[in-house]
Structures are given as C-alpha cells and as structure tokens.
Length: 116
Image 1 (cartoon, rainbow, N blue to C red):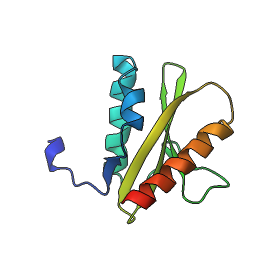
Image 2 (image 1 turned 90 degrees about the vertical axis):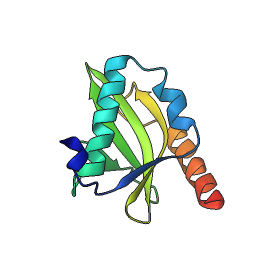
Image 3 (image 1 turned 30 degrees about the vertical axis):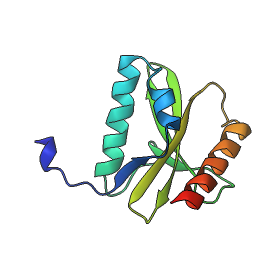
Image 4 (image 1 turned 180 degrees about the vertical axis):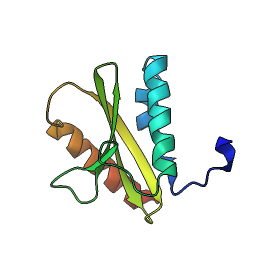
C-alpha cells in the first residue's frame, strides 16, 4: 500500500552528482539510501537524525545515512519549500564534514540557482 502514501515533498536530483556516487555503492547501502529518501518525501516533520542544517551555510542540509558502521552524507537544499534538491554525496570518514565538500555544495547550489 505504499502507493497510497501522500508525499509531503518531492526529491529532485540536480545533474548527475548524486548518481555518480550512488552507482558505486554496495546494494545494501543503495537500499538504505533509497529508504531514507522515501522517508524524507513522506514525513511531515523530518527528525534531525535524517536531515540536519549545515551550520554556517545559507540553507544547505545534509541527509544522514548510516549502514553497517559506515556513514554517508548527501548534500541538499530546499527550493520552493517542498522541493528537496539533491546535490552530491560522500562517505564520511571524519567527525566533521570536510570544508571542501561544503564549498563544493555551495558552488553546486549556485549553479542550480543560475540555471533554474
């Protein structure tokens, strides 16, 4: 009955940044990412466990995915309030998000805003 679930927001994949990351992942990681993205579409309020604002940025968020001790972060932002724009993703290996990945997300967001 998943087809009858009302989506609170839509997910849009900007260019192929995310796809390039996704195709390299193991099947179980792919399943967990798909499950998490579905959850983000359906829940009216998203817990911080799955989506967190990146401090010091103008509207950038990280989608948080964990599987078998591995941590993944998918960079995203909202457009028109209900559209979740997915940018690139990384496997997180340190406690803090790498600054260069945040800078990359900022540049991708600018590119999106120019081209929309």
